[in-house]
Image (cartoon, rainbow, N blue to C red; front, side, top):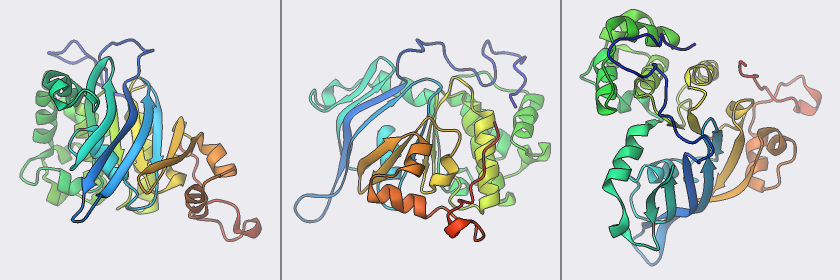
Length: 298
């Protein structure tokens, strides 16, 4: 499900990404984290250190219970988390952060290029959308901020159709949309910027399970093959079958990592075991041990 690449006023296809060395990591962190100060001695919360390498085409899942630091990590990767960041953060060949060199070495132009190539989907899609703007205006703004040519009406309709949204949605504002429609509009807005990396922060947590799987399937179908994805969730089941690696976050630390199936079959850390045990089970399965897992579309 990809939009029509033959559009006016642009040399890039709808979901294309800039051409770069496929062997160079999109995003890489080493010893990366953030300290948020408290009222007493020591930090109120410390995230990290986190070592992460996300290659082009790579899909990584970050999973953990509420309050473990998942959203803080997403904000830290964008440079908008409160507190003091530490460690190193690289985007392609550009150094965005190296605490050993000090903040004076940060390149504003590198951060600007980085943020043009990264889009984030927030947990509360309705709150993340401009309440006064029509959907078509949000999509136009997304493309303008990314420095891309504007789409025609037909191209916007095509993008919305790819996300199972009717054409009339382009004229609506967020208050006229359901929760699932708001999340799909947020995805349409993000994809309109043709990002190289998409960060999805708990995008299904406010949806029922059926709608959650629909959103996951749409995310799989509409993300470009060259696009990297960091999928953040508290639900291990939703990561099955489409992420290359899963990182388990507990109390601000990565406590386990590996392929989804290995973590499900042989969880080592108590936090991972708790996530496996939290997966809904079919009552008529042996010892209620059959997970109520949906196999995503392939």
